[in-house]
Length: 109
Length: 114
Image 1 (cartoon, chains in turn cyan, brown):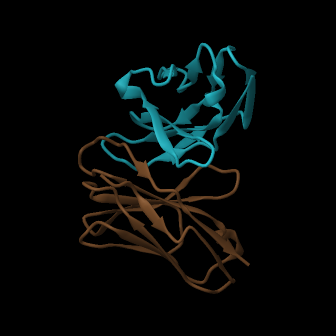
Image 2 (cartoon, one colour):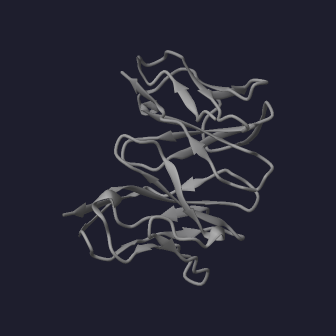
Image 3 (cartoon, chains in turn purple, brown):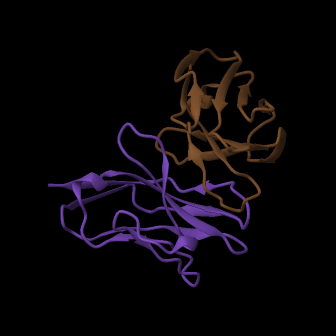
């Protein structure tokens, strides 16, 4: 079955602390993995995708095929990182996404 | 360049009624996908339209149907509404066939079924 699991509903950290939002997936084949973010009162938007191998707003995510994980990391959290984060996957060359249930990140001052 | 716009933003219906939600895709995008997001859940894929044809469907009953128009705008229709249809309905557009797999989302239409 194709599935994305985000085990944490809520993650609370203080400003400057490291952040890791967990994402595990189940997919037969070679998926493409994404992180989407929704800031307060804004629409869902792409944060990063694994094939780009880039860092956006200080966030990185590495695809670990052995552990079927795509955890999102940031070494020093900022208050403006507070948002809802969704991990998602799609098959190759398709833009149909399977989303996880999301993790709310709260960064306290 | 305009983004994805959806209408209406909020609406309330009663069980058994029918609803039509509308979506204008981002300029240059030819593919529209619809997602249902229930409270506390991630978005769930309903279906996708590419060049006016349905191009994939998720696990939703036939009372969920859609259309895409020549200008690539789209409608989502839900018949015989049930209480569990209460959710945020998201439209997303993309440039299909590019393999880019990047969706641009609208703000959503929040449907409440009483």
